[in-house]
Amino acid sequence: MDDDKKLTGKTNIIFCIISILLLCLLLFPLFWIIVTSLKTEQEIFQIPPTLIPDTLNLKSYAAQVKSGDFNMFSSFANSLVISFGAMAVAVVLSVPASYGIAKYRFQGRKLMLLGFMVTQMLPVSVLLTPMFIMFKNMHVYNTPLAAILADATIGIPFSVLILKNYFASIPRELEEAAYIDGCNRFTAFVRVLIPIAKPGVMVCAIFSFLYAWGDLAYGMTFIIDQQKRPITAGIFNFMGQYGTKWSYLTAFAVVTIIPVALIFIFMQKYIISGMTSGAVKG
Amino acid sequence: MKSVKKFFQYDNIGLLFVLPAFLYMLVFVGYPIIDNIILSFQNVTVKNLVSGSRDFVGLKNYFDIFKDQVFIKALWNTLFFTVSCLVIQFIIGFGLALFFCKNFKFAKAVRGLLMMPWMIPITVTALIFKFIFGTDVGILNYILQSFGLIQQNIEWLTTANTAMFAIICANIWIGIPFNMILISTGLTTIPKELYESASIDGSGKLNTFIKITLPLLKPTIESVLILGFIYTFKVFDLVYVMTSGGPVNSTHMLSTYSYKLSFEMFKYSKGSAVANVLLVILLVISILYLRTTTKEEDA
Image (cartoon, rainbow over all chains, first blue to last red):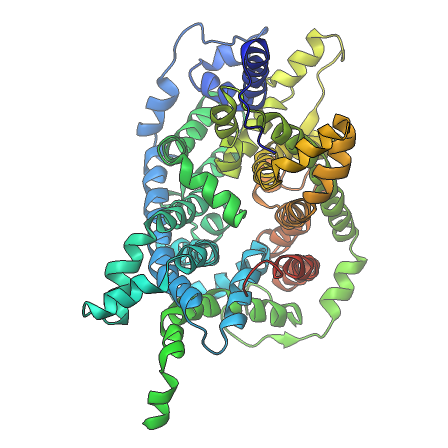
């Protein structure tokens, strides 16, 4: 129903104005914490509230670098390690898996596909206690590895289901041409098919990263030391202890959003494609 | 040896590619699901959680939770929360999708920016809304007061009903982009010729919407609502950060109550039983979803 005819003149302007108003309304919460993070604690409680800080206050950010038990930047680093780890595990496992599912009709294929689909719908509550026990027995409890292993289970099924469509759309002839050029199945997969499916691999990498970055349940359940915890768990702890210290809290939140915003700005096309073809959030 | 060779004929080689991911999921998801079911039939405490023998107690945990008022409340909350969010975010998302399918200059760019709320970590969203709904610090109370709608600041998050309202608002904010983008994509699949012939036949806008847009959008609407149900029903982070189920257990969802039982009260088996109830409801819905989508999928 995309109207092909471009709106012109007055209608165009009216629609543009309405869309800007909608944007301001819907993204106000984001604007509001960014502004708040730049205010002094005093100004935050001031009535009437100020839309733009009277005095620019960067102390909330600076204080976080120094202060001991809730060091924003070290939990930021923890989150990076966990998210890149989970992303690596998810991509390394799901790229070949999706190729196998897309290109081969082996026994049990449907069952496996169904398995990947169902795991996407699982609530985290079902997995927490058994994983907790498992990680204790594996001696990875309270290490970043526990969160990495758990977070990858969100990225893998998503990636397999998205990527299988990319691989399925690659014509068989391309693969056969690679065999004629002396590739075997494995080298053809690595040298020919993966490069063609690269946009799909990007979508999977981005989403696996974002899932892990946004995770709270696994991070706070499987890692108990505050210094090792991811940033989401850091925020949650911080809220528990300094619940009304909004200048620090909002600064913490803004820092958490930064990687997401960067991904959003530079890789938007992958995100829209990931959302519409997979339409899933963990 | 021959049979091994035969097994790895063309198609079965595919199995080698899939196996690592499949085994990974089997170990880290498949096994925990089974273990969680077993846990719910046992009496597991801090002492025998990791090692030691666990007593088999049959269905006792399930009988117990269904007698537990908080559980019943959480079950009802989860349903109420899910349905409220679904209806409202669907209507708003649909409206926005219709608006942005018009071809005006900013359409694509603004629609893209509106995806932001869906992407940011839910913990952050929870913090933002906690701040907006704050009693003294919150801008919502300020706005309502300056319009003269309320005389005194409302304690949104420490009163049962208003806390639920705040959580629903936050979740709708996350859900709108999801609904909008999927319905937008659905709208682009409707052939333009249909609209042209409808307008030639003298069909009004509303009539065209009801007779053409809605029926052709049915598959999209189905999957948006069912997927929406699944992701809303298992909500955890948002509620846990905003209220942790409080005040006085009034905003517990099945997921947060399960977490509380297991990791705050250390009644692991009861927590597992609650999680399994959540799982069963989700599985029923998932089967419904797979039935509607497998027609399109090549599965």
